[in-house]
Amino acid sequence: MIPTIELAAVAASALYGILRGVRNGFDVVGIFSVAAATAFGGGTLRDLFLDRRPLFWVERESLLWMVLGLSVIGAIVPRRLARIEPLLIWPDAIGLGLFSVAGTAVALQSGMTPLIAAVMGVITGTFGGVICDVIFNETPSLFRTTPLCATCALLGSVVYLAMAALEVPVTVSQPVATAA
Amino acid sequence: MIPTIELAAVAASALYGILRGVRNGFDVVGIFSVAAATAFGGGTLRDLFLDRRPLFWVERESLLWMVLGLSVIGAIVPRRLARIEPLLIWPDAIGLGLFSVAGTAVALQSGMTPLIAAVMGVITGTFGGVICDVIFNETPSLFRTTPLCATCALLGSVVYLAMAALEVPVTVSQPVATAA
Amino acid sequence: MIPTIELAAVAASALYGILRGVRNGFDVVGIFSVAAATAFGGGTLRDLFLDRRPLFWVERESLLWMVLGLSVIGAIVPRRLARIEPLLIWPDAIGLGLFSVAGTAVALQSGMTPLIAAVMGVITGTFGGVICDVIFNETPSLFRTTPLCATCALLGSVVYLAMAALEVPVTVSQPVATAA
Image (cartoon, rainbow over all chains, first blue to last red; front, side, top):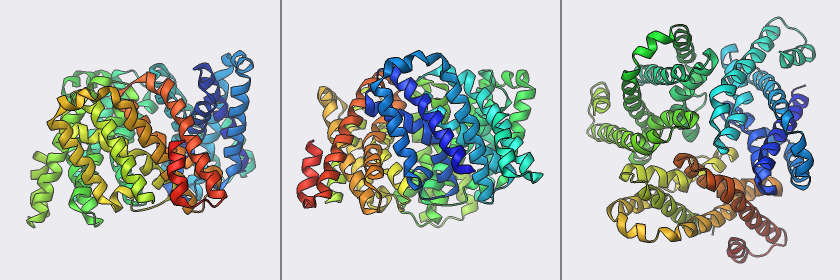
């Protein structure tokens, strides 16, 4: 279940990074850099903190190829992408929810306590977006949106933990936590 | 001795992060995020560099609960905290000195040479504040205060190292180095 | 071969950090902090990602002493350094090329696939400059130069990989890749 969630989270976050790179007139390598930092930043930090090696995107190289493919498409047809710019908030929110659940799940599997697992979930969910904001030097999102998003991510983690404690089957609990 | 120093350093740094979060109108999760990043950032980087796992705040989960408690208090009574804003420089300076000493001590224990230990001490002392500045996108502190603070942190580390070389008992040398 | 390349890359990147620190009126510890972050940032991230410990600057402490020496010289004779400010782009470009090649080589040695090795090379080459830009809160370089530089770094990595695949002797291929 976790691999599927991670795949969707990486795709959503990469799309978010690509859209912002396109909007700022980056070339294909610049777009790929931003997309990869946004998509892999949170999970990489979680893996470093939990000492899981190889990193999740080194272990599943297909994720890296997918981000590379999406970036090339983004660089080739920037105008079509620009039209969906108003939708930019959705990939971010979806990636956030999915990554928070995946991060919490991975931390629980590594034998962490619920509090640590929730913190790891929030880190996994929010850090990619924080990197993206730092790269683009944009204050507003960090001052206003991120704390709100962090609240959402925490909610997702807590819902997931509550269901984990009640031994709800994982295939049911993960979609519900993401929705929350 | 190191655990006591770390406890005080975490409390001081968390307070610094909370005050800045409150001043910027963050919600409780936002305040907790900033406080945790400021309090655990430097020590986490040191632990990653020295390959010490679990990280110090995963090993001593009580630190995380303390930061969480302080953040909740900060979110509930923001006005009272706003009054002590002029004192904001003190938690920062105390956290810096304490973390530099703790970082140097941990690096020496891990068998590092004095130069590497001093560098690890400075990293442990300054990185939390740097993260905090990057989050709030504030230039002045980075341009002016941080180098000065880094100098203070280095002084603390060097004083500690000098005393370690002379085999001064640790319980004496650590408070002195922090004062310096 | 890799140690020689790393030595030159560290010297070039440290010089770049020192020049920017001097221009902003930092004291000697501030200059050293910026120089060390710029010179060791990319390689440190690569070592963390590949789980190589001790870090390359802990293993070869002479690199740290060299950066320290250069920083002290920079702090003593800032006016002479200010004159070569227009040349600031060169240490950056040279450090970038050298680090990309060294990063790709180290990743290949660690048994990574070509794509992962190229990504590690680009990270090693560009991350020091990104840290430097984030510290100085300068947007233009991040928005314009870095993506271009990332493209150069990628070219260097790909050229190196192509020659590695063809079993060109390493002593020939590394200078060529750096030039590219």
